[in-house]
Image 1 (spheres, rainbow, N blue to C red):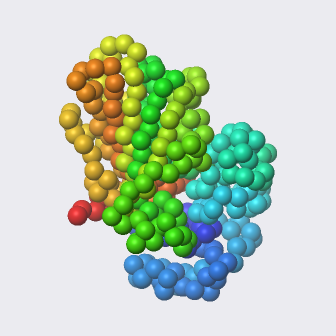
Image 2: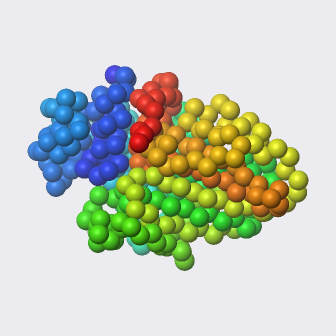
Length: 344
């Protein structure tokens, strides 16, 4: 069995890791940390996990105990993994970071967007961006994984076939994205209160969002040159889910776009290219490590519209982290991730 630890286990991505790993045939959760909840049993905080983690309790972060694990997940706010990742790597423990600490390759750019100096710039060159549909071979050899953000996952997967084939104007891309309230984390914040978020929808970060440089970095890699991206996220009154509506201007006759997308993702276990004319729903991926994609060309004009939906806590975070773990340890990539979505 692969022994894993989780740093920051009380948030939504932490409990989602626990839920998914409870069904993983090759993984045992040995340690889970929380400074504020040390001593509390996991099943007492999350009663849905009763019968799965009845003896596991939250503990203070301990480098020695975490260093005894084969891999450690960081389900923490940005800046936390900086302090511990290097120590764990020296002990031979692999690190899978769900925060933004290692996603950007440029330490100065990271500092600009996150308002503090990067705490471990010496590790950036080693960190592998954990989007399996792009970096599967690198992930297999990695010691340090930067799990992509939720918005960046949906946007990149939706646009990859078009950019890799140079079919759209890379200088003018629009990503209009919606997220459920769990994307803001579990901390108590007024905008996330039910009375504030219910029966309402709003845009935020229109002039600049922290996920913008990450998305731009990934899309530029796919295009082979810098891209121009307008990214506008929205908060919607649902618990979980990401819906990305993506617009690109075709630079020539693209041929059969449906065939292009199906061919690009034919061997991808967690990408579902929907039939022609489809409009995927966020509820169709709730609880599942899936991205469902549909491609449209309205009026057969020069604009292509891609619709991509994921569960922000699964394919957008914890499920993708486990997908990376499976690749790193030579396991079946699907292990622990085969449950269908929850409907209704």
